[in-house]
Length: 158
Image 1 (cartoon, helix red, strand yellow):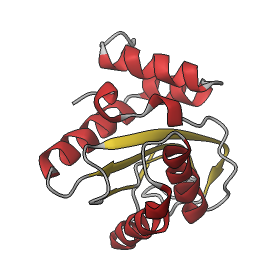
Image 2 (tube, rainbow, N blue to C red):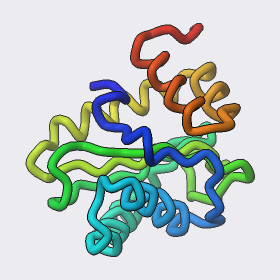
Image 3 (cartoon, rainbow, N blue to C red):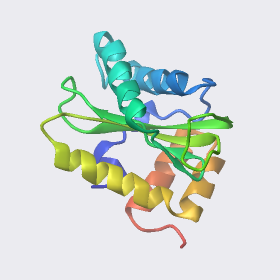
């Protein structure tokens, strides 16, 4: 599984305005709605599902990164987006740091293997200092998309 398999490039947002956890999740879900990947009537249901997952434990994985995610029957395949907060958002992260880099993932309930593979791939990339540094420096959605392609093709320096 690679970013190209699930990130909806037309929904990437490099200037998140939200200042809290639920706000960021709403904003990223709205990006998927605005780009036509999720139906608008599903918005509140999806946001609630992600927030319910957050109650189990924060998806703020540390190193200023978070991967909010859920499984939801309104999607037919894993889909996600990327958001960058310049100021950082309190996300109850494992290391206590505010979060700047967000990968939101929504997968169908009947494809748990794909969901886990996507989460594993995101985590693997976010574990790399170079990837996080380059991502935090992206100024446009096109910059992010290019970085994701470079990561998919193993073109980033170690």
